[in-house]
Length: 518
Ligand code: GBH
Image (cartoon, rainbow, N blue to C red):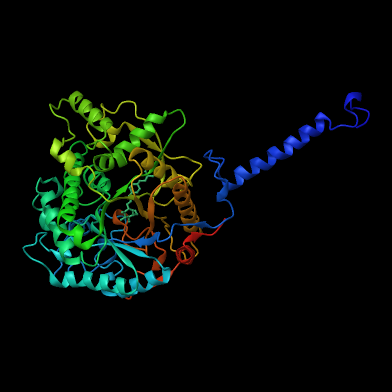
């Protein structure tokens, strides 16, 4: 050292040591950012390492299911068919494994064992749905099926006596077949049908139910049911029907909300929201940020903008693009129906909370020539979705990017002036049944961490609800994928429910009201 060190630095700290010191400090900070995963998003939320992430007092931990996916008893005790009964009974079968929800988890018979496992999980809220054609077999209040009503009364009673709050979804995709025969959601009358059904449910169950979700994922109802036809009623009319259906769903939702506000809120003191699904969208390399915003507006904004934005109505970008494409395609009207001023006001503000259902992240880029390919919702959005080879792909084809929920919640916070949010669904699919479901635990851990961080940034998240309590009939995928914290043995006439490792993981979270430091 002595020989290479210039004379003037002798006896002092020489620049070489400065460099070494700087290098060590630099390595340390890179490690910190890498280790906590903060580097990827550029945040510097350093409190989040190693400590328990505590949630606000009274935070609503929960799990979710839906009637057609778990109940079975499709024609028992006076229940009549829904569009999903009819759809799954079609031959050739539109369901991947040819199965149906005829028996599913047999929760109609075994609801008490559902409540038992809810208790084990220690959740505060159970989100389930009412089968419309079980309580009103023909869809209207002209005939009420008392045995169906009794089933839900019993379930609610059982929940409350075990300290679990019911969160009731009025519509999780199973429209009474009788109403489908009158045109279903394409009919102008559908909003009124839903209003009457909602009023009936508020009247009948409202004294005991304080959390209501009007519709589950109107996007899926419109696009998967009427553009792609992979869900009931299996219509493939990509350019027109999805918009009409969505239009009626929005009016139906608002009618239910206003009825509650006028006649029930004072007495029943509950909250009424809607569950909207969106993926997280990220720009594919080479794409601009505006494609991300357009993707969000065409998915979440389609339904959230009319309800949660300051100005109401559909997102401007949807109205512009669909009007423009319709004109170029030779229509003399926009394929997107329009709301009049009264309707805009009626829908605006019609929710006490935004229910967010989200499962994955999608890379998006600009679709160059959408008009040529003809009228469709997907073409109107001018968005191409693609996979990222670096992200984990689930058996549903959805991709897992660890910061997804945080990014969506930030978008909602900015776009809609920070409304109260419940994460009404998120979950992780397996195509084999295994009790050691480490991938699901990892997914949940990341998702819960995301919600915690979003809350630190000011998001008004009130609850986190996992899809799903147990394996069930996964719509077009039948029983070929599993989402349950509990495994269900579908060969067993008792449909035994067995906890997976993720059930124990989640139990720990609900007990501590915190995510243990990782
Ligand atoms: C929910 O829908 C349903 O509410 C529930 O009944 C169902 O069982 C559960 O999820 C699991 O499927 O390919 O990355 O673009 C899910 C709605 C909409 C979520 C489309 C995934 C596409 C993801 N899905 N979305 S991606």
